[in-house]
Image (cartoon, rainbow, N blue to C red):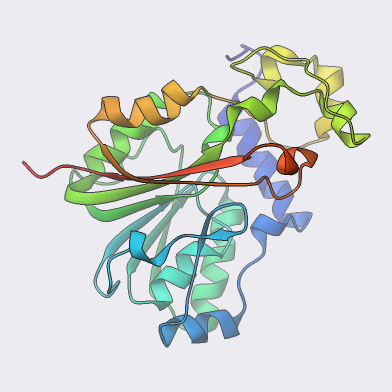
Length: 262
């Protein structure tokens, strides 16, 4: 759901640039110690919440693996995977988030590329450019998912994998102000959009200058990957890291999906 007076890509680009200035936890670059350990083989990255991705989702050896960290700026996952031996490209809508990755790369002597753009349009990359697309929870900031999955499928080589983390859409039925009071009150029908379900005044009061969010359906999330041609090979869930819903239901889902050979 969009509105003609709001460009969600431009809005969220500026919002995430501000999040960097406001020290949002997902904008804080990892330390040199984390990078040093990753170089020695002691590493982990998160795809959903604070849960490390199972190591058996990855190839045994990352050296030489071409990885696209999709909508994954912030100086966190990309530098760790680069330190572990992968050839990493970080793609993000926010220039300041990408700058966080470059800061780590310069500080710790990492080879790492950064590209700025909309996750629905990966025309900067040719067909079959990558062995792995790593997409942590970020598509809640994207108005539509079908182009994302199609582009992921296109830029991956046959036999390559997509790791995707996303929100449990059911979390979006609850009233945000009630949650802040420690209460769960059903308010919104799904699929949810900040632009559809809140007035500009409500957005300003509840979100401040934060990014716009969209719930998306599981049909769009999982069914969309299948429709793009992927085969699901693993699934995980985790509690939301900052919500009172955590004791009742999973807040995040993660999928590992394969682009078939031939």
